[in-house]
Amino acid sequence: QKEVEQNSGPLSVPEGAIASLNCTYSDRVSQSFFWYRQYSGKSPELIMSIYSNGDKEDGRFTAQLNKASQYVSLLIRDSQPSDSATYLCAVIYTGGFKTIFGAGTRLFVKA
Amino acid sequence: EAQVTQNPRYLITVTGKKLTVTCSQNMNHEYMSWYRQDPGLGLRQIYYSMNVEVTDKGDVPEGYKVSRKEKRNFPLILESPSPNQTSLYFCASSLTGDTQYFGPGTRLTVL
Image 1: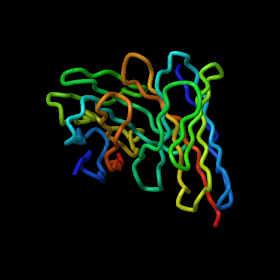
Image 2: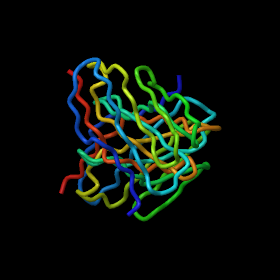
Image 3: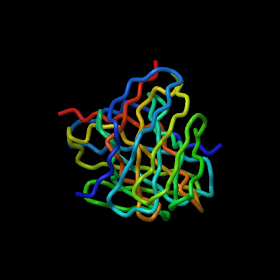
Image 4: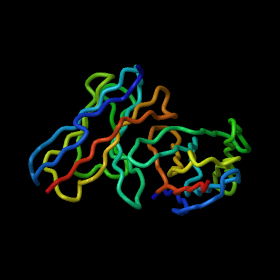
């Protein structure tokens, strides 16, 4: 059974701080990794994708992938109250479109 | 406007009454997928399609059917709905099988 694990939180950080979100996955055949953000009552939207080991930066967001340790993380720098949402980690497996999501981490950024 | 649309957005039905939730995308995407989202469980993939007439099971296919007769549409069929299928359903599409664009969701209640 392929699994993707996330700490459900809530994670609470003050405005301007760095928020660190983590995700582990069980299957080494995993190919593609994604972070989605979901505001309450809304549909998920993509923040970052990452495919190879290392860091990938996009504005205030940095995704980190370590395939040997089977984890992927998302750092949000200079956190803003508008970043308060649930963050979903997703893994797509090699050879198809089978997608496993973690249960999500709720982030609260306090003004 | 590029989008994924779902209908209906809200549906209350009774056990055993067949229903179809429609999903349509106007982005000429090859890949489409259905998910259900339940509290504490995150998004779970029901079925996905990698092309017209090509579908495959996700993690929770029991009680659901899909078809992909044309590229833009991917309906989800519940032949005999049961209360445990009460959930929030999302359709998603993807051009190349990585980044997914989600529809607005369909909230289904089965009494």
